[in-house]
Length: 326
Ligand SMILES: Cc1cc2nc3c(=O)[nH]c(=O)nc-3n(C[C@H](O)[C@H](O)[C@H](O)COP(=O)(O)OP(=O)(O)OC[C@H]3O[C@@H](n4cnc5c(N)ncnc54)[C@H](O)[C@@H]3O)c2cc1C
Image (cartoon, rainbow, N blue to C red):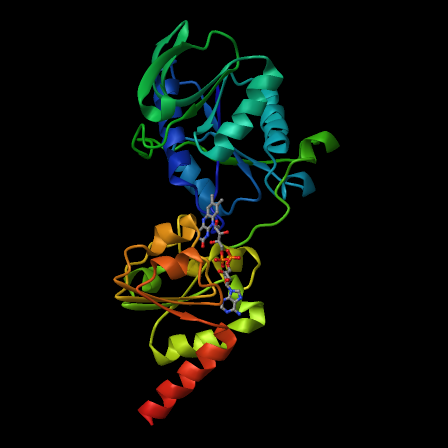
């Protein structure tokens, strides 16, 4: 029989590539004379999820629950998957070739003392069992023999189309709480964070950008610069020092490891003009540098420069803009 590790989204739906793995397992099971397929999920599945897996041919849905499975751990998930496999007597263990799928299966293969084939796209003969898999990032295909049992392999994403079975499986839900050794919980996810939203679009397309670097002095030193940006209806673009120090968010960074900008006017204030920053702003049409150092690379490359303390110059410029607009 075959066991398939199935991944579930935070919304409680089966991941598409896991449905592909179920479809592939079904083709393999059919070639092997109709051996059963069991799915393994981590966490308590609802009825709809069990129904989906049954519609893809699952005879049983083994649900791994308990504190050891509350967060992702490649070794703990592998321990649970192996416990199910051993009891069910499965000769094939498979999953989608996702980072998690590959990590868990690598643990399973190492513990079982067998090779693992990652990113399989098709199978050939059954005896000996051979598979074709993607290597070198998908640039080449390799044929691999998985003669030992269990045969452990992951399926490359979109190698097959996810298709429900012509006849649904029983989908019997089986609660599983295999024990996990403390050593298997050493490397596990302890917290997750939403990625910072990418707000750099405005910066990349702006006609005017106000730049700010270490010369701002501190996280509190941006008030006048932000006022200037508002008066000019321009976004703020900053140097890496500023984002590294946590003074401003990363999406405002200009340079090699930030945004490339090409505004009509760039006003870098307190930015030395290191090559990595220059890489992101050199296509600005006009550069007006404000810096205390007349020899700073940004000053020597700028179209115009004002030499002086930005904390004196910027408030004066803001006041003059406000006065003229009034
Ligand atoms: C792999 C790599 C990638 C990198 N990628 C980037 C990147 O994408 N973007 C980037 O910006 N950097 C990048 N860097 C960092 C880069 O090398 C510089 O360290 C950084 O750009 C310097 O930032 P800064 O100009 O704000 O600070 P500094 O170099 O310290 O310059 C501060 C400037 O402010 C002036 N100044 C000080 N006080 C005042 C004041 N009161 N008024 C006016 N002027 C004042 C000083 O004269 C000086 O010119 C990268 C570095 C590496 C190694």
